[in-house]
Image (cartoon, rainbow, N blue to C red; front, side, top):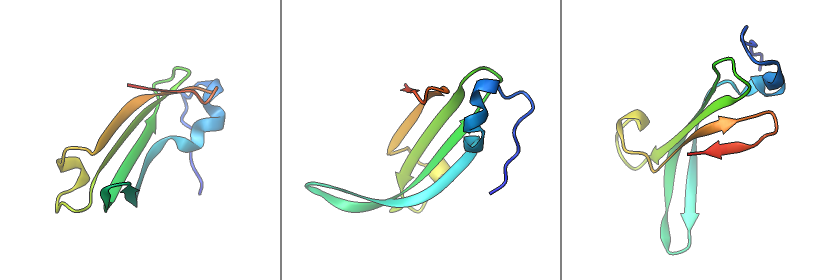
Length: 90
């Protein structure tokens, strides 16, 4: 898959440039004593020219007949990703 490196991307982030954008997918979860479930997840990486990528992730149940953006998330995570591959989540 081809991608375009943004003009103002910090040089330290060049190895991570392929991550920039929004990624979506579906999955299935199982935990002990919890019925199996299906979910959708959306992950976004973006930048503002500094030496880290902004990270945002949300997931929601596929059991509900709603768009992922319209429901309360099963899980919501945001943070930053640096060249050292350290992810700081809030």
